[in-house]
Length: 144
Image 1 (cartoon, one colour):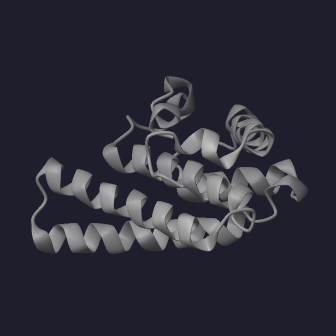
Image 2 (cartoon, one colour; image 1 turned 30 degrees about the vertical axis):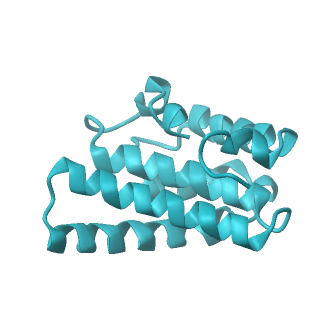
Image 3 (cartoon, one colour; image 1 turned 60 degrees about the vertical axis):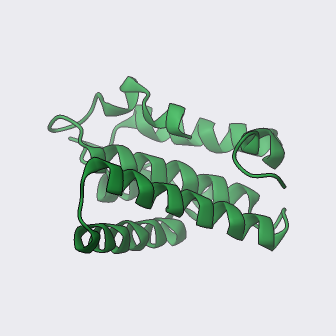
């Protein structure tokens, strides 16, 4: 997912230069779609372990940037809230129309307009996730 979030094409419709927060938002969107596709198809403990691992790594990354303990706690709370705001909005992604998809993405990403390329990108991402196995994506992350 990290590799996917560094794709420069994702940032072409930005109003301003992308930031750490923008890249993290893309990561959280990817992770939310990942959980949407694989949740319910896999053991709850494995899914919880993955969730815990991702957010533990996120906290470590924020600390490595140089934020202090209080800032890290606030940032983590903000990112967790953002992630849990994303989840219900993408739950019916395949069934909603393009206009609604655009407004969902625009609510989370600092883009100029409802970029059709971005909508298409996430449609294809969900399709690719659906065609591959859960374990395929976890190589080297956790041991299921």
